Length: 462
Image (cartoon, helix red, strand yellow):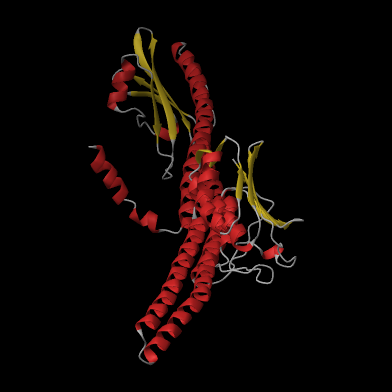
């Protein structure tokens, strides 16, 4: 039974959901204020009416007692309050004594007469408050025994002043409630507009972003800390993330187009030369080897760019407890044979310690540092790893001629090469990858020249 009721309730208010937020807020304020004002007005009216009725009933009861005593004493009936009426009936309802204004007309109905004859005090209002009627009265009738015979004494006082006061109160309450409702609705409207104005500004900013506006940021007050301001900071953070993502995409496309152009051009030139005139089998084999070398370079370059892009877009790393000595040994092992062929040595100094890192990325980063030192440096390559106060420090040194001083600030940039001091092949992405791994771990990477070569340091929290 509850499900159909819920569906009916949802279907009965579709117009409300279609209203703007400001209109819904103002309507909610107006309805709530109407209920509150109606309750307050009802309470005031009830209290004033009770006070006026109590006074009217006191006057009626006082006059009733004086008449009852006069009837029992068979004396002259005393005058009552201004505009009051009196009447004395016998048990059969015949009028014995009556005010001149009544002209002998009985104030009681037959049912009321019967009730009063049986000793019941009868009280009734004649006329209504609204609509306005003339001769509004409040009457009271009681049975009095006089000389063994029953008499019905009826007294009535006019309600004109009481009704007039209540009508004036109703008018004032209606006016005050109406003005209060209008004022509350206006204040609610202005407050809702002021509260939602930043939201509309943020919406306009988001629309500008959708239209292609670059470097967009929302104007968020720095001296506030409310829900709307926090929404603005969240949207700015989102815009920063979107801008960074767009910049990574632009940079990836620019880097890929820049670096892929050269090997593709070389491959096209090799093929054009091979197809220009008939070639011997040896010449064709040499051409295919050259093309294969360029294809391998393209594959390595594409993999490096994709790894950098994946690191830049990763939300978090998959850290896990890892043995540092095993991690460093696994990263260096593939490069020992290269060092032996060149008559060089690779030394490793890593303690048996457990570090909390993502070895999937840190292992190739260490390998890049060793490969970079073997490719561009000379002499022995030394790798030192230390753990101290929750931090991991990896240091790779060689015995080469070092970086040119002007190259050090951009050593970790993509495709940066120090050709003037170091010769050899490479894409220029090795140190950029190391920097990306360090940043993803919340650490840093830097390079510096020493007296005997280059030192590259990777510092990570672990």
